[in-house]
Length: 177
Image 1 (tube, helix red, strand yellow):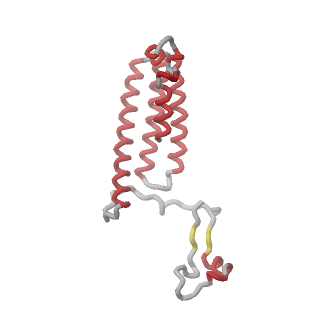
Image 2 (cartoon, rainbow, N blue to C red):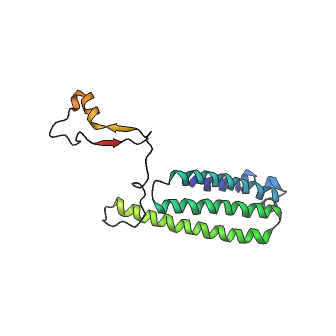
Image 3 (cartoon, rainbow, N blue to C red):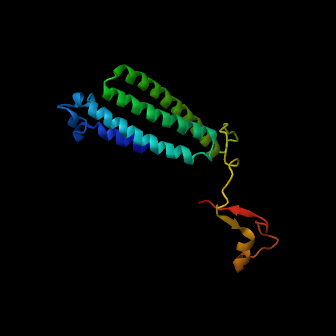
């Protein structure tokens, strides 16, 4: 999500004059209803992108799914905060900002959990954190391409099956998409 932070930061670079274009100076532009409404829509767009990431992460693990669900909620809550600020409801916007901050803090904790688990795995530490693996629980579609090792070995003359082969005849390997 580094692209998100880069694109959001570019909006606030004073030399780009994006914020200042909403008013006479930078500070007035940052408080303007137009800028806050635009940022609200910008965050809705990122929320939709994150929703797609949530959907495609369903086959991974529970920690990743919860991470994307909370991140998605955070984007929509921050979007609502900016839209409320644009409407002049500063009290509601402040409450929504605090709730959104809590969401991003939870996302940071989950990312740290995934990072530590990934480091343990990469360093072959023999210790894995519970992630709630879902890779073997999902039903695959019948249209998923299947590699049949038996037929492949007979089609390729230099890969004929013999006693020393690592892949037996009855093995079916599911190819990644």
